[in-house]
Image 1: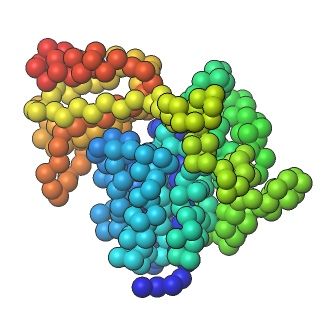
Image 2 (image 1 turned 180 degrees about the vertical axis):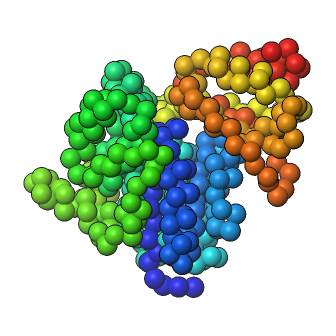
Length: 352
């Protein structure tokens, strides 16, 4: 067991922003440098579909069925420790679900039991330029507030999908980011193409950088200052995560910062028609902003990995080495799961 501190990088960003694309680029960068990366990946659903995009030789721990920042936060330290003990990686990337509040990620990874084993080096937030502008038009929405938290906590921001907005919109997005974060460098990118040496730059830990930036602003020197909260030992977990409490301060009904996000998983019993599936995706309500899955079509041979984000869908042919379920995961806000399930069942019955 090594006693060296393993650098850890958190990849944050709202659903569909491009975190997994950045992750695969970063993994390749480290591998070409002769170093060994490892991944801890979290999904809200019960199936880790994004993990299929990661090189199978890369050690990976999956935390499914909840959000790292709260539902399964207690397991994060142990999972990270086990990953490091078993595989002795040179670096660990933690990709959290797009519905996660990174404030809790900082606390979870810097847990006292792990301080001698890991050093949190960066929190990179990937932002979809078009979605940032669209969500900013409803500034009181919980989704936009979550995006703001993800931006404020970042040590570096990648303004992704710059090719899908106009030059003026890109400037507007950059200006909005600078209002939310006066600390993090901002890099505009297409498909997360950026200088990946950012992960190896000797910039000190997240704590040191937030502390220095805070001192420059004349504020406190706490590691979490950039996240707009204090690391007072009496600061409760539920306050970090935006829980609501009764007037007496006691444990009222808990509301996480992302509890408005809904997940619906559908397992297909048989192949479906590709054109009918694309038509179904085209009819999805705007409340569903992310979907992904593994599909087998009746008019093709190979299975496909599909990704859908903000009205755009990509299909990629895959050749899995093991039998995988045909499944689709839909993520959004307050959509009607019954209507969606009825449409999926009709698709399987050939009635779409």
